[in-house]
Length: 251
Image (cartoon, rainbow, N blue to C red; front, top):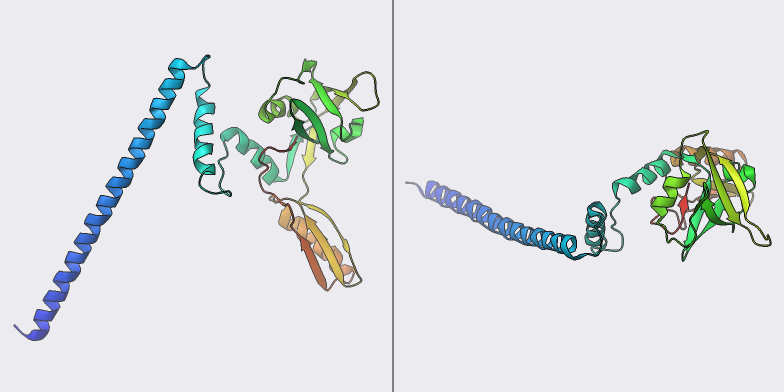
């Protein structure tokens, strides 16, 4: 047997052994990881059974599972988060660039719901609702002091175009609650808030959020600024958002 052939056989044998060893190590790592996952799942199952048996009232299992997943994902890093099926509906609305509702943005301060913004030209704007109004009833149902979640309130406010919802609000400077019948409509969500020329050559565009319509809106504003002589652009992306995590909600 020639020296070249012996070296080839030796090299082939070493490569084969290395591949086999690699597969064995990968299998061992995979087995260890699977064991850790199985232990974690069993621990979660035990926690679920314990809650089912000992909690003071019947738990909502879907809520518990969603909260558990949220905790797992959010524990990874500050930028990861979990979106439930119900929350995904709201994300889809924002990404589509429009939704059907009353056209206002609201926030919670303790157990009270305040109007944080009113979409210009929308249903709430047309009937005279204002920023700072405190919403106390929706369709004669008292919502103040109930510590309602944003999802529950959103369900009460959203609805098909043309349907009505009665909002009772407490406004600063008024003695009695004011009532507004709001006819739901299709609300456009604009990603580009505004644009203008700062100097004869420098333009400014403000993008507040991202949706399917963002690119087209941006191009339209860019075209207008160029027609005004823009040579340089300031693109303002401060506080832009894709998904609102609950501090304020638009409906």
